[in-house]
Image (cartoon, rainbow, N blue to C red; front, top):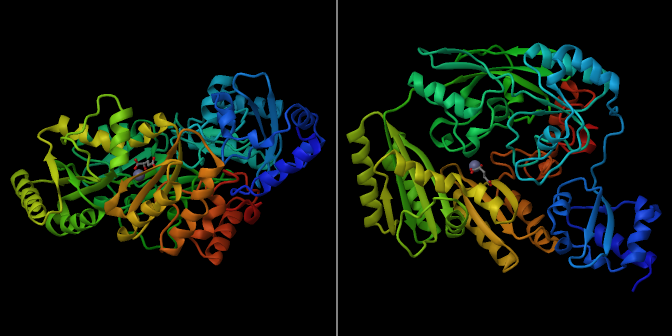
Length: 562
Ligand SMILES: O=C(O)CC[C@@H](O)C(=O)O
Ligand SMILES: [Zn+2]
């Protein structure tokens, strides 16, 4: 057995070689725990994910968290390991610590029940949807109006209390949960629809409206949201706008930069920026709302949104097709754009591994196509106003594709149930992944002809270490590259990063197509943006949030804004 000192040095080496740049906290060698560790076990190489199988430990172990410590226990023994690690992210020491006067102040104007300190409620708000990121906030505030958001931020700014804005907490990059002890400001109670104008199709609502509720409200009015995504049952429009969520209809209706006509946002010092225009055209200088769309709560808290909604079209068709290779998928996309033109509303793809996951982990899901499994599946949706015209167009397109051997099999949904069960396969993959184990998630924008090259390279690099699952919005060039494994493992991560970012950058892609940068990719922004662009972004951040209290540690590298 090694003595504790040489073991500590070995751990030091292990951590400093860590691909994510973790380093051994200096405190370790001085701390009582490290002595316990070193004396007790010595074999540091065992401080690896296999010993961290228990959920309690597993949650603490993350490649992206500012890991403070890990306790491991060898299964079947009483041996305990204590390992202290630190990442490059450290709590910004200029931020104040919450005290009892702060709590009393918030209670005075928000009321007792909207100042939440109960452990269970806090736990849910501290952990993200994937259970990958976990903060340690001691306070969750639930404002009911813009004025209350303004009062909260004014106070937090003057006290230097850091804040994380939160909506449905469905983000996938750690953007909606605290990193340390930030105060969580959740806008869920601000969920009123303010107005809807049928002539212009403009909907004005508060930030906490759940996307699915907006979809049903509009459905009753004969309109639809230009945005639809798998998380619609929980995600909120304020979060959608703040992350510039993409989703399933972007191909047809474009991004939120095009559909959001105006918004209201509260800046870090509590000022209310009224940009809530409902106009299609307004060329009076800089269009500041675009700064807030996709800024992930780092510039202000979005409180109201005005959005242009298209009329509901009566004829919707969904086809689910199989392709033998990726080349056929590409050709099919080109053909769909040419032949279906303006009625094409979605062109999604999933590979065999995605289908296998959906079949294995989603209740009630079945493959509408007979075995064997195919290499790729394409989901095509058309939306139009003339049923027979749309059907004819779709049939002609499918016939042409079959003649050219672009599709090997396929079905066209005969009713709404069939259409939604096909959509369930595609939309359910993220959920299936969480049930299958742990996932390394990458949300990439790439030239369509490059997408499968990356997937193949990834499979070569990983071999049997993990399963590469590829799906996404092929029509928008958006690949969701998911690496599924039974547990997080440095050997896997070393094969993925920085390779995946370098490859994407080299091939003129973006390291975030639609999920944002959050905590996960704040330090990776330079793979997709030039240094000068990032500097300008940091200057804007400093202008609007000079104390850096809004969603700290996210979006931009800490060193540029702290
Ligand atoms: O989990 C993912 O990687 C993607 C989630 C979402 O953007 C989707 O398109 O289903
Ligand atoms: Zn997506």
